[in-house]
Image (cartoon, rainbow, N blue to C red; front, side, top):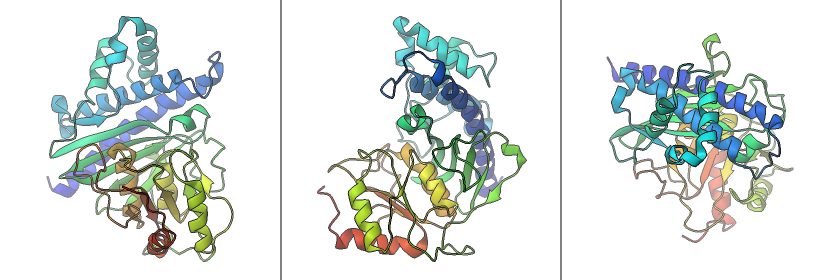
Length: 348
């Protein structure tokens, strides 16, 4: 088997795993409205979704010899330790119930084992990394969130699959209007990027290109920027200064999670900016691996705010980088120049 065909098989396996997990998280999110007393500060529903999604993804991957079988190496966010505590039996029961939507015969012990397959420390030469629910607050407000799965070899992201259960294939649909089908983005290094329906991924994939990328038309109007909803994740005021310097106007589109990488990758926005809000903050690999590959394979340029490529070779953190700039090739260099000219680099 060639390296290219091996990566393509990993991509198809990842699509299967992410599609199954999307179905689970969509069901959990639908039930939020019927849970008495749930508020934006109540993390229990998102905890159910996190655990259930990680269990489903790890189960699908571990069933394939292509993924490494029993020796699956996964760097995930969650540990089953809290679920093993007898006082949290009710939470475990909720997680198992959610998992059984796509894994009908799962026993509690099976689910706990599957979750703990995500306990690798990112020191191997090749491994998977997963963010089971990226965009917690978006999930809780019935907004955008993502399930992001990536395969990393030798410190390089080789496969990226990102499920966005509330994002629409229709660009005209508002980000705050959840789509019942969702979108899956998928990419293999050197093989381009595609998107497909999350509820029917077998229905076919469409190639996507970032604005201004080779083979795609560039945006002839003002720059279109997207950023995080939460001000704790990026500096909204400084993004506005960059947009103004580049001749843009208005408020950037705001949505949670790595879905922003997908929005840029398919040409719906020209740039996604994540400007560090505090000195020394280190991004996690699972927050950027899948999305950054999808964007770069669609022809976008992804770096940190210093213009350096994201370095996935240093374990679980992007310790060599500060922030993220993901943009079409016609805008990326101008954004990096604007950041420097406006003195927006935080102290290290």
